[in-house]
Image (cartoon, rainbow, N blue to C red; front, side, top):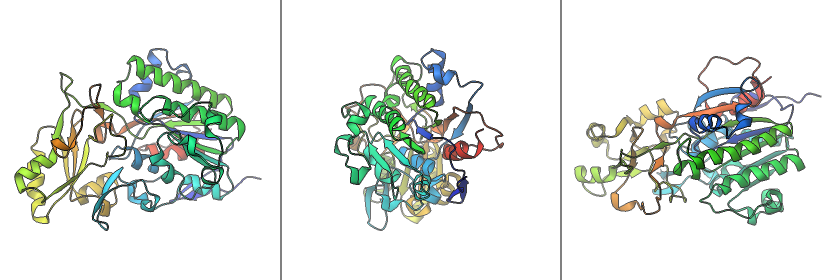
Length: 406
């Protein structure tokens, strides 16, 4: 008997007619796929031409990991689910905090809703920072590569993740952290045959290596091999990304950084304003907590003057009031500063120069966060029956997979 559609956050999703695997490749600028296909490194992806679906979609701005992964699994923007960065100023607690706790999530996920309806659901993510958010109120399997040696049947729905993947726990700063996700995902599809599986990687490689370089192509080749295996096992596979990635350097390879808090301190005095960088997370070695999006908290009578001054700084693309930013980027107003600042493609925003340790950068800085990293792939291994003409978003991944593929 055909199962009823599942409705989540105002959108209805058909029951999958075969296993569905939605893959979020962290930092996957569309050119990573293009260059890998051109080099012959991704034969499975190349073979989708004519039999699959290939779209270019927009991710959520700020183009960071947490807001976009949560948008994908809720099918909604941050104005609905509440996660608008990796890091934010909690006005209630009067503190800068990580937005990793599920208490900040304001909407249910597609994953939890299908699990509640009786589907077998699994989530595997590279970094543990996402596990609690993605698996919130979800019955099923949910674990991270990073903490795969600490799983328990009671907490994660699985007793031996290392045996499942056939790998040791990789370094958090490695391509292998993402490979573990795919190795475990393929094994899980073979063994458990989940109805829905969500796989989310890390962007360590993309932060270090541009599209078309040997290591970038090698990473996409690895991805391609595992996607081919998921396809061969009969799954519907939909691939998207949480954000793109760009070089943030000048012609000599030096980082282009606007240290915004230093500017504000000079203009208004120390400790009178606050710059928050929502890219901040526990894993800053590869980007130094530098991204192309920031929020600023300041007095009401400073907003107009500060906006004009900031807009004049070379490298700044957009200066928006809270209301303008929330309207344009679909953000929750109570978690956004008085101003939102977005830098142009080759520039990142910092707080104070002294707060950023760039000693861990062993390659020219590459990062994300702005409008310039908004375009991402949205690719499926099945043709679409009929696609509506609309602005496609990465958080349409489940809609595409369940409602539009033939």
